Length: 135
Image: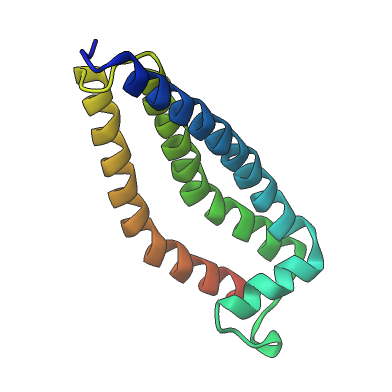
């Protein structure tokens, strides 16, 4: 436990509680985005254009869409875990464990998740382009 003044702890608890709601919303939006991008054809086309591919280069078959969704599942899973770790971190902050070893442990896990997302990003993009162009 920390030895901060009670007014400071009250503010920290309020901010932590707010952040837990924001992160919870992010968790819901992350899951919804994955389903929407590959389930709604207009969003799929917009996503393909964001990859700098022209419509004549792309084969949007059912198998390509399923492959794209599976490829995107890996970084989305990491993002989902990052959000869960952040939620746990702010829960610890809300309980007053700001400088505790458990909070530091959560921060380290968040950092390693961010590094893995940085590594996954170019790999995912390459696999998506291959999946969409080779059909």
